[in-house]
Image 1: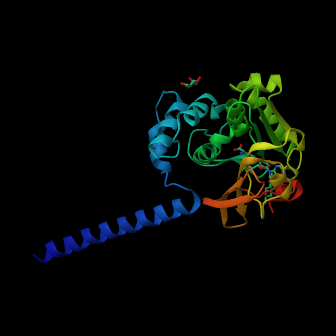
Image 2: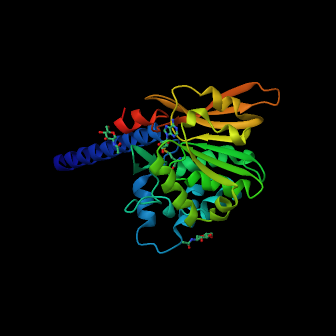
Length: 271
Ligand SMILES: C[S@@+](CC[C@H](N)C(=O)[O-])C[C@H]1O[C@@H](n2cnc3c(N)ncnc32)[C@H](O)[C@@H]1O
Ligand SMILES: *[C@@H]1O[C@H](CO)[C@@H](O)[C@H](O)[C@H]1NC(C)=O
Ligand SMILES: *[C@@H]1O[C@H](CO)[C@@H](O)[C@H](O)[C@H]1NC(C)=O
């Protein structure tokens, strides 16, 4: 009887600690990502699977409710992330991955979240600007959505990443759009935007700004939308809508963690 009691106490303790670990894990995950995608579960999901990886990733993001529309699912299936990461980097795991130069390729669920938020502003013929285009992955997705009569522009301040992204895009389903000029990537300080093809229906910023750069607000079309992480240590993904009268409304979508939108020098020093 005494032994039994001790056993139950032990079992009880185990259950409690399991719950605590679970709560801690969930809290940690939700603090850094907008939805509790479990890494181990995703790794398990992929391991040993010979299936089409983009398609599997899409199904997973759909099951978590991050991909909501057919159009976003299609573009993520068609632009293979595997073509956009450096050798040795796992492309389909739901985590940001280092691409050198103190930059990262954002996690699949962040790319999907931004594509969902911008979907209506990425219709055929529309203009899209991707600030901090890095690997070129999201710029390629934008190009596929706006099509040959639209404009997808990537701006990135690390010259090596600009050439890397162009090579990646050339291997992808967006290659014809790059060739035709509907997609282009430029080396510049993205905080200035890219006036040449403004105004933009959609602006995405892939690095966290201390505050929203005014040139980007100016280059947003009335009726257009910008998605931008704002903050330093604590960052919020902001959705900036410019109404047809030119007035601006801003709401917070979720808390996020991005590398800073900063000067090239500060980024390379890791500041
Ligand atoms: C988190 S990475 C995301 C890249 C891209 N969205 C992707 O997933 O591949 C942010 C990128 O912003 C770039 N960046 C940071 N500050 C910048 C600035 N002022 N002008 C242009 N690019 C900048 C970095 O070099 C980096 O490539
Ligand atoms: C994965 O599937 C998509 C759409 O079904 C297709 O466009 C793509 O080429 C496939 N990729 C591979 C590596 O089979
Ligand atoms: C990245 O930042 C660190 C400081 O955190 C710095 O020491 C390093 O040189 C930087 N790496 C690159 C590739 O610029």
